[in-house]
Length: 53
Image (tube, rainbow, N blue to C red; front, side, top):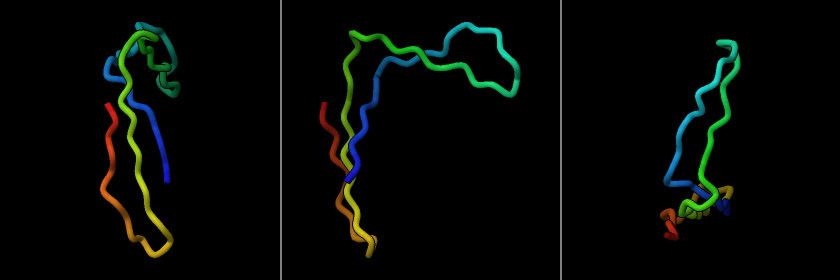
């Protein structure tokens, strides 16, 4: 089982960096988050993902 949060508001910062570096993303702390829950086992049986809004 794995649970992850996905932010609906996402933007890249205006930053100057080397081409080998990736700037960190910036999200608003007041934005809504969607939770994604996924389940699988070693035999690769799995359930459909669940989205919690």
